[in-house]
Image 1 (cartoon, helix red, strand yellow):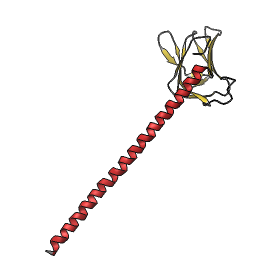
Image 2: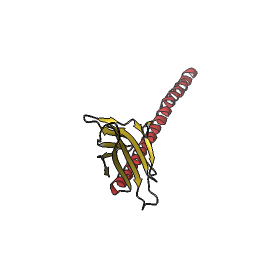
Image 3: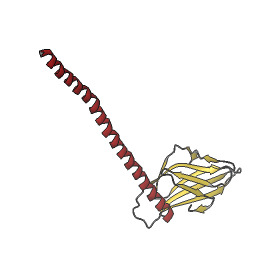
Image 4: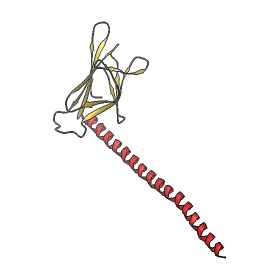
Length: 164
């Protein structure tokens, strides 16, 4: 009889150990996943916040974009895109404009511009907007340009225009 009572205690201890070895990792994983979800939500809200700032700055003219095309020898054109900050603003909320891609229209499709300022481009580009930043590239004919920002804004520019 003495052994029977001891086997119940051993069985109970084994059940408790098995329960704890399953339950503790489950709780750890559950709370870790919840925390990651909160972090991802904050990251998304932060990105939306900066997208709204960028959109407002572009729409109100705090950040001005101009696109000019100049004829060159040999049927090529030098294109120049300039980003400037409104001189009346002492300190803006954005220090730079991050560009995910610049595309020009070739007549049948939109093509990513891979050479800017004479160098191969690795997107995204970070352009300081505290002063004028100019990007130059060559194209076969004057064509519209679309600039995609890191936050998803699209700027459509026609040759020899200011604004978007």
